[in-house]
Length: 277
Ligand code: PLP
Image 1: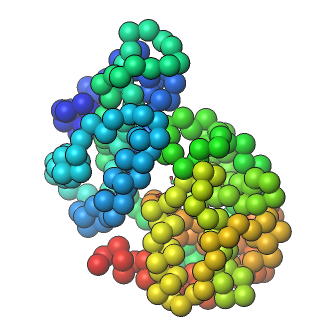
Image 2: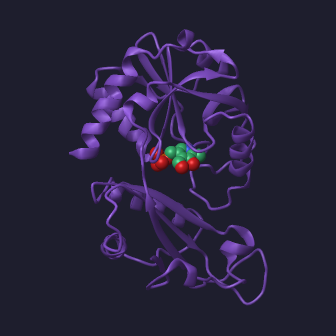
């Protein structure tokens, strides 16, 4: 079952109009929210970011926080899987003709949920590979927009190079991954790009910072270069579906001789506690 514009329908019966601006322009925003043991994780934070994205592109939020809670829980009731990933997207809606500018329309709301199988700690401990590329996305990466052509190109590049992620740099500084936030540890300090219009402010990013604080790791929300990343003691990616993933190779350079540093494990463990709190 999926949710489409006020109804729960089988996915094969869920259709949107060809004049929907989500279809024509990618004119919409989205969220991906993990569900652990049937509980939606950090829902209010995701709904707040959704509201910020909607506000930035002048789409009215069709539902109150309470209505969102109700709809998402109703959708989860259709599934017995305890760990899931909720995908929700709101497009500006269908117009009568194709034009870039818009009038007020009725937004199209689509929500689906899929099983989520986070990698286990032993799986993560094997370490993952990434490559770097220039960040050629637009200047409003803080909006979780459904216009994802650049991200699609990066994802395909990663697939073709058989790596986990493409790490992006703009003006000599690492911004984030194509679908994740990026952290490095150097000399007992954790660095990550500050929140700005050049990154998506990840919900997991905040949780990594909270976990790192608990582990008494000092934190600097300061941009760093690709050279800093290559000479770091640890490199991590974070996202709602990847959680916190250690990277041991970037562009064929081993990070810390391919050996996982001591902080990842501590921060990962605390994050697991937060998930199940
Ligand atoms: N940055 C980008 C570009 C992303 O696409 C994502 C997740 O999809 C993230 C960061 C991580 O965000 P979150 O932790 O909220 O999943």
